[in-house]
Image 1 (tube, rainbow, N blue to C red):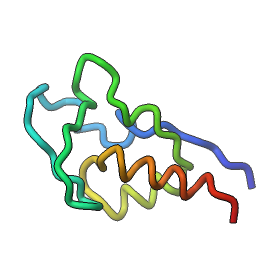
Image 2 (cartoon, one colour; image 1 turned 120 degrees about the vertical axis):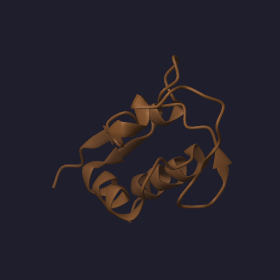
Image 3 (cartoon, rainbow, N blue to C red; image 1 turned 45 degrees about the vertical axis):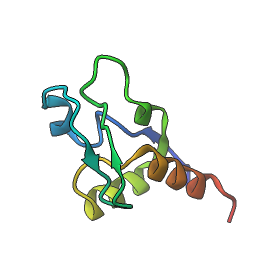
Image 4 (cartoon, one colour; image 1 turned 120 degrees about the horizontal axis):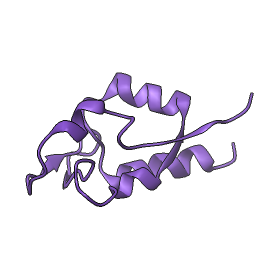
Length: 84
């Protein structure tokens, strides 16, 4: 089975990039830490550099509502990249 990496970000939660840009803080639904979701910002959000497999993205969509913080996304990326 081939691993297809997909970029997290605008394609993960379409409604997120429709909100107005603000200084509001989001809460990561995975770890509970506060962070700024930059998906609606003028500059690309750091989460767009995170590459996850289609199955991982689908599982995240099922399990969580809203964006995850960059720390959690990078942890998931490392977990997927680690040899089993």
